[in-house]
Length: 278
Length: 289
Image (cartoon, rainbow over all chains, first blue to last red; front, side, top):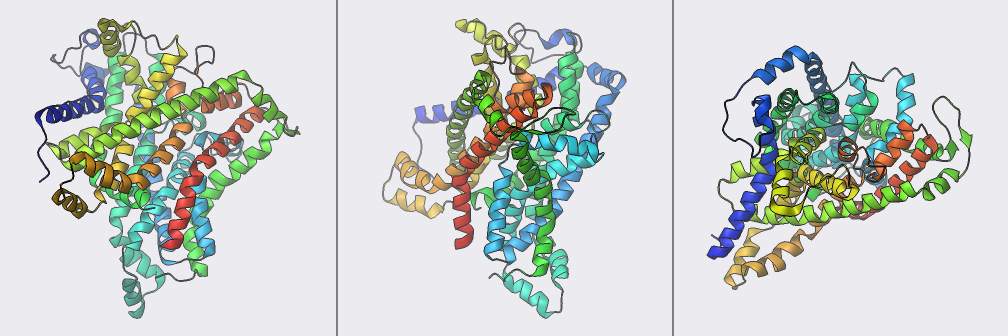
């Protein structure tokens, strides 16, 4: 037990935590509550905390803005694709950086982190015409490649640190038993680094699910993601349709909020392995 | 225990480096070439040397964007760091309903920038927003962020802190968990006060983590685009642009790839400069381990 705090210190601490709680949850609560309000109740001041909920906004969303659900589907495809791609790539890279070392691997690792700091908007300029020529404009695969690339550096570091914790004797034992390197990697080590993969996957999934810049520049129609369509609706709605927009936003944010809050253990483990140690 | 890399080692590393090469390195190198040329949609490249850089440096809008970026980045990053540190130390010391509190603090991490802008825009709307009206009711006047670039950029900063605080908090918290608890017990036996324990044990041991969190956030805030673009579109009269928005305007609106690429390359240099501290430390730690 730590030493007891004085009363004013305890009050100050309680106030600080209460403010941080309101700051973090307040805006999200505002969205979710507004999505269940009638149009006339949304902008009542002071805001009503108690009201009769209605699902009209959600019904309208399904009938009037069908494009939104296609965009949610696109977001899911792109986010899952990027998560899997980044997972496989960082798993293999993390293994190699954990078990092998030379001057060259060292410098490629530094380079790997260094390119990660490039601002995304810079690469959009030259990629734009190339993507067009390759017929990759407005496709899921392009977004998958872009999103995965921006996370493989950190995730490889995370995986390297998880591989580092597995004693090398295990590798040797497997080799003595006649296993090939590939068998060792994908049969034995893969199972032991699942926690690292889970941590990395959450970072990629959340990023890909929410990303705006690349989606805006590289998709026009078929591969449009949910954040992009929400941003367009935000600019287009007139005074009468805010509730419908809030319903869409609620559907977009609830799955990831659940994911992040339920998987917080992995987020801490991932950051501890990737950033704090790295 | 490390082996020398074999041919297969590079096979394991190849997907990683192919992705980085195709999507990050090659395009950035090409941006440098583009920055030395004049070009637009459907025109070829005309080599102009450093002309684009000269034009960028003599453009008052560029300097406006650079100054805006500087103020927003610094404002955001330091405020966020202090709050995150306070929050992380509270959590490490133990808070009531820890699991639920932790989940709540993390929530904004899951929110898209688009949604963050949308909700803050609503709450800060001068005529209907709940927060804006409360501020007005308290006698601070009307916060018309669409007409004033300063208030607009302040709101951008608030939104940026809102979405990124959980990440900084998590990093610092992970760093705090790595501190050996027996140090605190020893200090307590020696009669150190709470504040002494914080300044003599926590802070010095947390410095590496704080530094990493700081650099991470500087780099991420430096590339800020969506918040500004979705909130003010850089207006009024291009006065609230940041560097990424300036680049976007020139590249995708005015079709002036030379100017956009020169700006892009300047942003690359800026980011690398910020990151060099971190890279230097990382290279040393990998060599040492």
